[in-house]
Image (tube, rainbow, N blue to C red; front, top):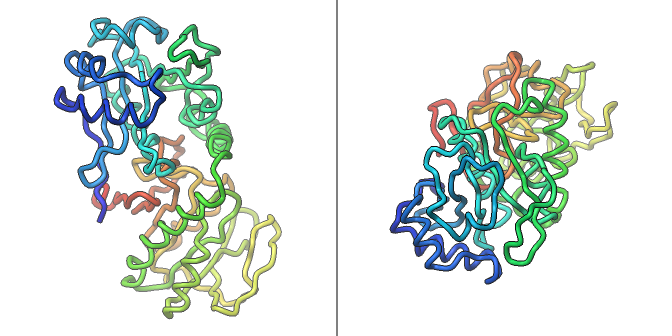
Length: 358
């Protein structure tokens, strides 16, 4: 199984960080080896490195400062780092080209947000090109307009994230978060989503083969992970499969399907099976739950109808949140939200039954 980990950099990682910068940015924007050595000598621990099976795929970091804005002199003068500074500056977020669209940057951003909260700093500050504003906004960063930076001769926007932003508190923050996540990934191509769907299928298939009870999977809507190929394979192998059917406002039931089942558009615009074979909740072994976003602690952001929050307490089935890796992030929580037992993405499994990622 692939092992993905995030660690703080050490001074000896200067060569790794230099290599990542050089592959991810044009020469006029990338920090050279000398500048990286100066930074790692003073604040190596303010860089995070994401590795898969021991290979560095991405990094993110910069100095700390009491100044509120990220200025060009901070890039060049490592001595400006203040270990007790209120603001964590992010000089760069680098992902190797072959690892793009796999959630590496998202994991690093979440890790830094968690660290900032633990350290009690005021927040994160970075600059990005105009086309990346919606991406960072989906993590709660706010666009403060065009930066004074002339770095690399490009136009940059300054983005700021602060813990406890009221826009992300409780139920009130959920609609805004859904909108920002969706806006942040409209640039993804259909083929990239398809490839991610297949990686998730390949993770789920061997896991579900060995479990008892029916598999309750959903029919994807909009930008949710598609499980259609998974359902077809399970049916071919003789696994009992069910899908949702709306039984009233906010209420759903699980109906059994087979390889010949046809579907129609239901009352809320979702695909429903032409089947009357209801599977009792007690006969379900695993529920695959769609997620607009999935929290590192196991909570999910759904479409907002509350169907799964009402259904899941009725069954003792294993709850598996299904999400793209780039949508793993802290989500607003309410008292009625239900924690998943496991999470699966195109990048990894997460296990909250045992309290650890796998």
